[in-house]
Image 1 (cartoon, rainbow, N blue to C red):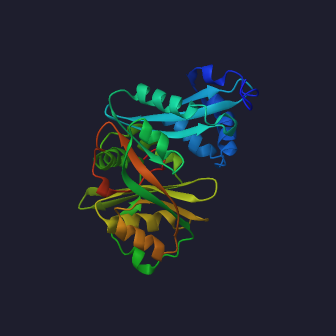
Image 2: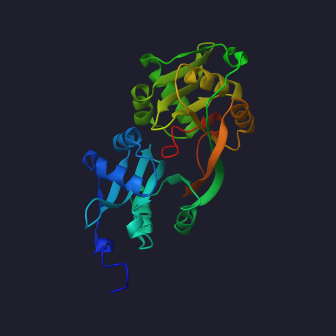
Image 3: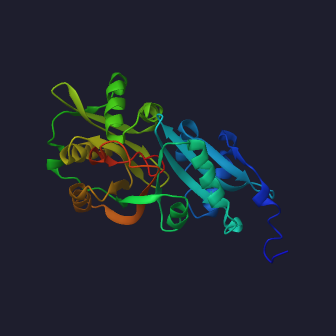
Length: 289
């Protein structure tokens, strides 16, 4: 037997199975193994709105995971492609990706890739269509950031309009996700003009920061106003994942104290991304778009 494989009995033959909330602990342990944060709230949301798949480690725990989240009939996102460090270079990541694509069927699939995963995704047919830069820091807002009219807290009766606005930007109905955001997020805001909704945003607390997303709006001015209102009163560092196409928002974020931390590539399989990405300023999270 090849050296180093004796402690990994038969993992390549273990079938991929659908995971459930009972597997949450093992998902968190796998994330820690790969030096990711144990983002329990994020994983719980993914179990609610997506399909979590995994490969059991014969020695205990999980050898790998992948999450597929569907938006309507024509769009899906893949995330949380994790393989335990002890099972690297055994083809498990490719198996998990191919399984997710098979489950997705004939739809457009997208993901955000780090430099470590990009090569694998290219091999299974993904193409880069953009870059997202994650900015993190303590926000120092200016009085001018609160001069935009029409920003107010979101209410339950706004849900149908918010779902419609989000679908226009993302290109597919994300009803289950957007509905869950109303209780998942610490803050939600909308922007109205002339009785019509022109913006929506949410802020939710992760392990080490407050993530602001999604931010959907008709203009950069609306996006800035939403972000300013969303982070007001919340403690801790703020995280914004901004597509490089939004240069004006990026400059504003840096001027308000946020620092570029790392970048990921937006990649697509099976056709161009639908929707109006110029109106989608930040995703819910990189794992969900």
